[in-house]
Amino acid sequence: MNPYETDTHLSQYLLFHYGSEEETLGDMPGPRAGLNFPRRCVSELIGPMGRDSSALDVGCAVGRSTFELARYASSVVGIDSSQSFISAAQNLQKAGQCKGTTVVEGSLLATFEAKVPVGIECQRVSFEVGDATDLRKDLAGFDAVLAANLICRLSDPASFLSRVPKLVKPGGQFLLSTPFSWLEEFTPRENWLGGGGQRSFDVIKEILTPDFELQTTKEMPFLIREHERKFQYGISLGSRWVRRRV
Image 1: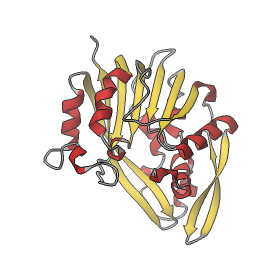
Image 2 (image 1 turned 60 degrees about the horizontal axis):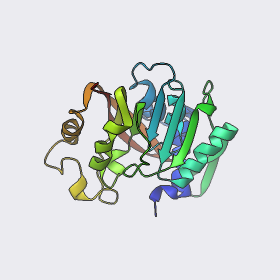
Image 3 (image 1 turned 45 degrees about the horizontal axis):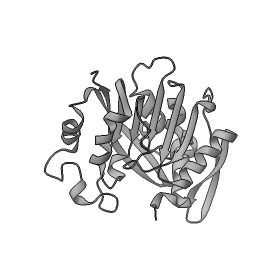
């Protein structure tokens, strides 16, 4: 079973994507630089986009980064392997908001309202269920492709990266962020990029450099609340790659 189909993960990711500082941290001390990660993955990594451009968000979860891409692109496709996540994103697209829950402690819950940010043209966005390592064949030639905290949750990350040159048009951009949190429950050890003997980002460079130019890198903290006093804190390495023109 996909672990991201659980109600617990759905609630955590709705808060991760749409929760305010108050809803996430309240009065607790904490690394506030890790808030709004899905928005920052777009706003802090994306380069200039032309008119009538298109974008693809692979591993979009509950859709915040997909909506943010709609500020820059006239059409955006968000894809995730979790039906639960995609259903929530589709509901947000239709209604503009939905209720979520967050754990205070034990079985004590609090509710919050997940809302599509002001200024987003929701008609530009579509969502669908899909496997990042087996994307439908007609997905190709996007002006921008985002993969945020995705590759270390794939069974075969190198397979996905090998598909990226077809997903991005010449002159287009690939936006990648990852904390390189390799776990055997998601990725067999033999498929870890670098396998422990080499830095993962060096392997990514080897895979992407024939088709892409690395333009920028950026440290990108993120914070996922589990309950009022427990959080997951990580720092992804963000990067922007531009597809070489033939």
